[in-house]
Length: 98
Image (cartoon, rainbow, N blue to C red; front, side, top):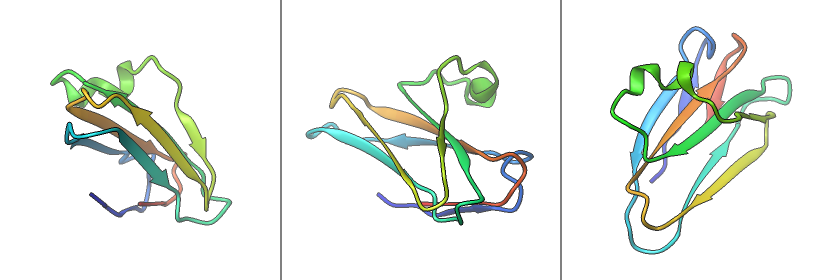
């Protein structure tokens, strides 16, 4: 699966997605910041999130990863994981990711 995301203001409107993952083999989510170096984004990936997606970003206790422009952030997870939740946010700058 592939998706491209572009937002004018990644702080005002962060990107949230729940991605279903097939259970055949190992699974990995890769986030590529296709923006310029001066447009970093924060990314967090959480496996098996509850149905309360609206409050996920505010209640997320894990660490988000800063992904500089042109960089890739990869997160592997167990084959038994049925879905992952991806949150991308900026400090108000445009967000451009794949």
